[in-house]
Length: 430
Image (tube, rainbow, N blue to C red; front, side, top):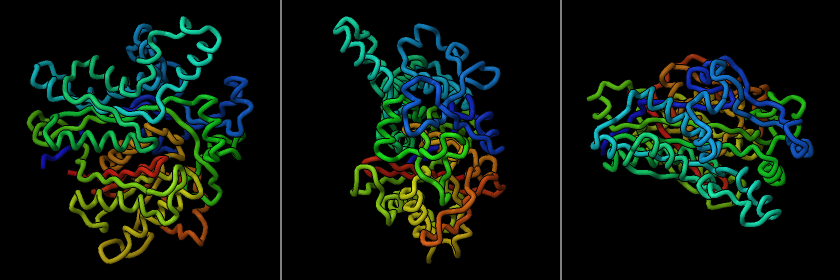
């Protein structure tokens, strides 16, 4: 089987635009969660009034302004915001990888796999209202192209002329991880030599927040203290904070990367998938689904649980989800082929800093995991003052509040989504 490595990274997050800025602010303990009260009257009536927004402003300040990133007015009309984020993150990842093919063979061997969990909810809402008021002629001819989730991959392919696989995943909050894992398999099976892969999301809309709030998924007790609202593994956790952004990686067949002298961040050593087969939105309390995903990722990598140095947890700051994942990790990593004691297990959730980016979460957090390997640094879990509670056995190293230095050779990045879909990516230092 062909081996797959990561050679480029690109980020658009609530901590800023770009990998270096986002990573520095993450490690320094900054939080990108803000109050959304006052953005519009509709937000002011919602029970949850916090969100992790991509900051707007000048590119010089690491903030978002579409035209500063080469998205002209015509592109802005054609591309929904999530696709714009995907485009900018893709450009950074490709520049980082030094991959700008021009000959036909290389273009045919380069593909794009870009997903989103929800896509452009703004377009759905605005067009529905316009149609209700004015009928057929009020519907934009760009409505469907802006709506379709695969258009993020389509726009990237068209901009760069990539003629390899052009694909998209939409698996709720597992989308970003599935996009990377599936893209790696396309390289392993020879469908491409290089893949641009990741997830993007931008659906911080009153309708989306209303839906998640009605499902009792969102944090509602921290509206006056937004930076404290997302608190993975903490005993006071009470729901996730919705976020937006994009994470994109350039994946490459190992020998191809070596031949062109590319910098290699890490290898994708394993990819595991599973289903809870249990409930639409709630996880199994025993964590069986997450445990199976991690187990399969390690099996594909040919590794034992004892070698895992770090896990970037899905942990969204919900009571049930964090507890189930914690149990799954401990059951897998402790025992005959695992760690000797729970305190030897290093876990963190970066959602304390950036909230839950839904379809982009898995790819952004995979990049954080790769950067952790590259810099031998454990990113912190913000707002973690009192882990869990005694009955749930929260006794691992959760990297509370402050980043830690640690030699990381092998790491897992977990993502789980509504519908009981689970994925785990195993990265290894070369």
